[in-house]
Structure formats: structure tokens, C-alpha cells
Image 1: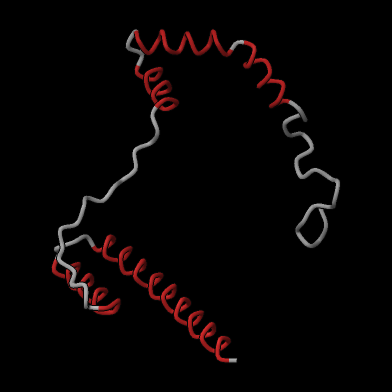
Image 2 (image 1 turned 120 degrees about the vertical axis):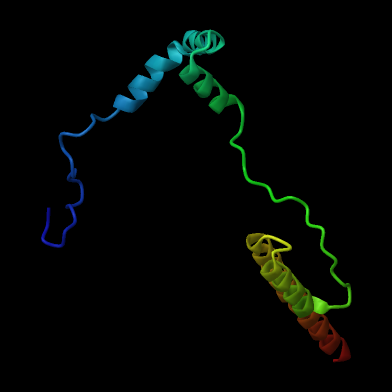
Amino acid sequence: MSNSGQFRKGVSGNPSGRPKGAVSALRQSLQAHAPALIGKAVEMALAGDAQAIRICLDRVLPALRAEAAPLDIELPTDAGIAGTSRILIEAAAKGDIPADVAGQLVSALGQLARQTEIDEINDRIQALEGKQ
């Protein structure tokens, strides 16, 4: 190791660590027995082995993600982006909608505002170029 706290190039920081190729050798060995191992895991799961059940289900079913329930909130169409953001923040403050959902919606409105601004700038540029 050098004085800078980093290992020299080409010199392992752990020379007595796992030998090269050990993982791929293990993987190849397991690959040859994969059908039998899978069959045994399913058999154990069906026999009621809780850990085997968990292992099998972890491989078959995707992890559940939290999903927000649909919102029931009136948003006026003429409030504009700032007005709509204000309404969402007030609804979160009153507890009508979850604060994290309000934050996501306000963030999405901010993105919409930026995209609208870019579209307006492009329209103005096109109009100026058309006059020349």
C-alpha cells in the first residue's frame, strides 16, 4: 500500500481472498444440478417447509410496492399551475390527501411548467425566424 492510502496498480488489496474463478466454478456446478435443486425446493415448499416456501415465492412473485389510492379532489381547470399547486399543498395541510402524494403531484406540475415554458420559447423562436 502506498502512503496515499490506495493500493498500487496490479497489487491485490486482499491477496489471500477468494481465488479467481471460484464463483463461476460454483455457478457451473450448481447449474448442472439446477433442475433437481428446483424440484427439491418445490417439493419441500409443498410439504410445508416455510423457508422453502419463501424461497420459491420470492422467485415467482414480484415484490409488492406501495401504491397510492386514487385521489378524490376537485381541481379547477382555470387555476393555473401555481394555483393548482397551492390547492394540493392546502389539501395536504388539511389532511385531505397524503403529504407525499401532494409532493409528487406538485413536483409533476413543476415539470409540466418547465415543459410548457420550453414549448412557448420554441414557438417564439419559430415566430421570430418566420419573420426574417
